[in-house]
Length: 214
Ligand code: BG6
Ligand code: MG
Image (cartoon, rainbow, N blue to C red; front, side, top):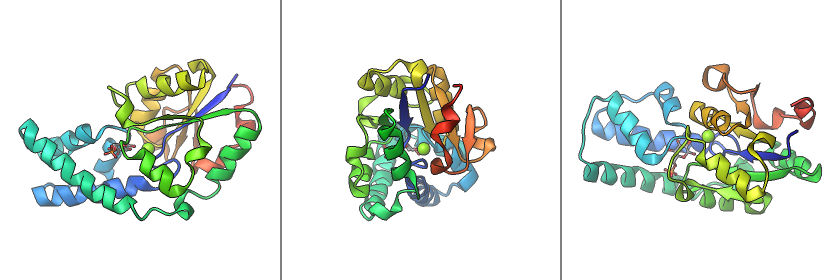
C-alpha cells in the first residue's frame, strides 16, 4: 500500500533539466567537445561532478581535480543565472494541483533532488510549502543511482520504503528508486525510464487511481 509520494525536481516538476543542458553545452563548446541532447540523458539525476566527468569521457579528455572543480563551478554559475528567472508559471501544467489532490487524500509528499540548487528553484516556483520532506544534493553523500536520497526522504516522512512511490525522469533516478525498494513512476519516454513500474508522458497524467493494487 502506497502512503507517500517522492518527487524528483528537474524534469518532473519543472523543465530546469533544459537549463542544465544549456549550461553544460556552453561549457562543452568552450572545451571543444561535441555534446548532444541525447548525451545529456546520461547526466540527468547524477551529481554536478559526475555530470562533468561524463562530458569529459565523451570528449576523451582528462583533467586534474582542481581544473574539474573550476569547470563545475563555472557551469553552476551559468545555471544559477538561468534559474534566477524561473517563474511560478513554469511549473509543469497540473503538477501543483495533482500534488495538492494527493495530499488532500492523505498521502505524504517529499521532494528529492540531486541538485544543490533545488531550494532556489522551489522558492522561485513558490511551491516550497507543498513538500513536507526535502532532500537535496547538499544533504547526500552518494548521488542517484544510489538509493540514499530516496531513503532519506522516506525517513523524513516516517514512511517505510515499500510504501513509497517515486516520480523520476532520469534512468539513474529510476534505478535509485527501485534500489531503495520503492515503486517508481517514470516521466517521459520508455527509452529513458523503461524500468519504472508505470510510465507517464507528463507528471500530471498520473492519477491516484493508478495506485490501486500497488
Ligand atoms: C539533478 C539533475 O537534479 O541535479 C542533474 O538532473 C544535475 O542533471 C544535478 O547535474 C546536480 O545539480 P546541481 O544544481 O547541484 O549542479
Ligand atoms: Mg530529473
